[in-house]
Image (cartoon, rainbow, N blue to C red; front, side, top):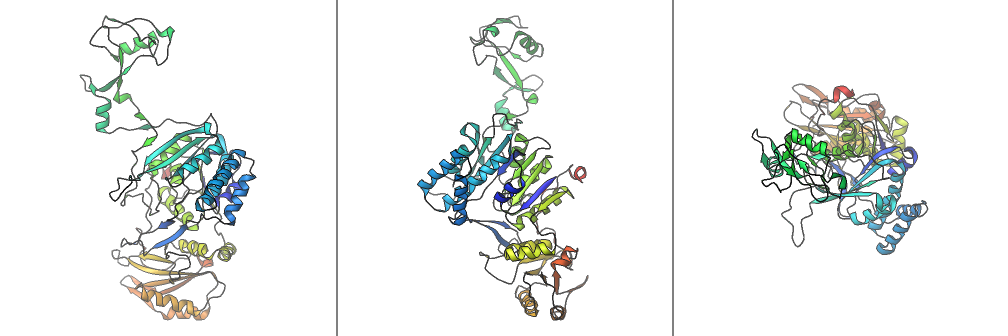
Length: 535
C-alpha cells in the first residue's frame, strides 16, 4: 500500500517515519532563486496562462525558519554535519543559498535516520547547489558511502547559449547507508548501430559476437598452464594466467566459443555472443533516457517532472519487491508511480494539497482503485474549517481539486481575480467550453459573492459558474443564483450559477454540467497488466 502525506516533510519524517524503516529514498529538492515550483495545467487551447496555479514558490530565504534549522543541525548529535554546515555559513553568510543548505541539512539527517542499514539515497539536483549538497551528503552519510555521481542528460542541445557551455545535464548523487546495500544490476539496451560496433563479428549462421580476453587481471600461478585446443594447437596463457580453469576452457571449446588466433603463438580469446548478453552494464552517464517531450503521454505539466523510466531504473536497482520507497518532495508523483508499478510500498510527502490531489488522480488513472492512505488533508467539515483558518490559499487549491477543476492563479498568491479554477466541458462532445470556479472559505457569505461570480462569468465569456463555500449559503444567495438563469444546450438545461458547500461535496455531490472534458487533466499512462492485479 502507498501513503501520501500533506505537510512539511521534516515534521512528517519525525512524527510518522520510524528509524531504519525505509529501503530507498529519492529526492529532487527544488532550489532556483529565479523560479517558482508549480503545477501547470494546460487549457484545451494550449495556453498555460489561462489555467496556471503557482503553488510551489521558491521560499528558501534566510529567516527564523532557516535559523531554527541551522540550530537543529548544531544540536543533532551529528558532529560532522554540524561542523560542515557551520563552516559553510562562515563562507556563504546568511543568504538564500545558506537558508536552503540549512533546511536541507536537517532533512538529510532525518533521511539518514529512517534508512535501513541496507538502504540507499539518491539526491537529484542541478548545478546551482550540487557542489554544496555533495559536501553535506558526505558529512551526513560518510564520504566512504558515496557510490556514484550519476550524470543524466535531461535535455537536448540549447541553441541560444552564448559565452558558456549549454547546460543539459543534472547530477544524481547516490549514497548507501552502509557497505551492505541492495544492488540489482541494471543493463543498458544497445541500439542497432551500437550493437554493430560492439559485436563486429558474425558466425556463418549470422550470430553476432565480440572477442574478449582470456587473461587474468591479476597474477594467478594456479591458472598458468598450456592448453591444447580442439584445433590441435597448444596455446600458452598470459603471464598472469588464464581467467578460468582448464575445465571451463574445455567447456568453451566444446561450445565453439573459443576464438583461435591466426598465428599459433597468438592469444586465445573468448567469443561473447550478442544474443546471450543482458546488455551493457549501466555506467554513471545516463544519456539513454530522454526528457519528457511536449506531446508525451506521461507529461502532466509539472515543470520539473522527471521521466518515469528514470525513476523506474533507480527503484529497480536499489530496492526489491515489497520494499519501502520514500520521496519527501514528491511533486507530481513520478517516484511513487514507479514504486507502485514495480510492486514496492511507498511514501510520498508534499507541501501542497494541489500536488497530493494530482498524485491521487495520476495513480487512479494508471492503476485503478488501488488503496492509498492520505494523511493531512481534510476528511470532514471540521478538517476543512481548520485548513481554511490555517491557510486560505491551500484551502482554495484543495477545494478546487474536489470538483476536478483546473486551478488558476496569478503570479502572486494575493492576486484576486475572482477565479480560483476552471472546469472545462464539452456540451456537444466537440467544442470545449468552461465554467468558472470561485471558492469562499470564510464564515460569512452573502449575495455579493454570487453577483461577483456572475460578473466574472460574463467577463471571461464562460458558460457557467460554480461557487464553493465552507459556510451554508443564505436563502437570498440561492435566489440570486437561480435568477441568473440556465445554460441551454440541445442536451438539456443547466443552472448557470451553481452553489456547492464543502459538506455537500463530502456527501458526493458534484457540479451539474454537460460532458466534462477528460483531456484537461493529463492522464498518466495506464499501466498494462497491472490494473487487474492491483484492484
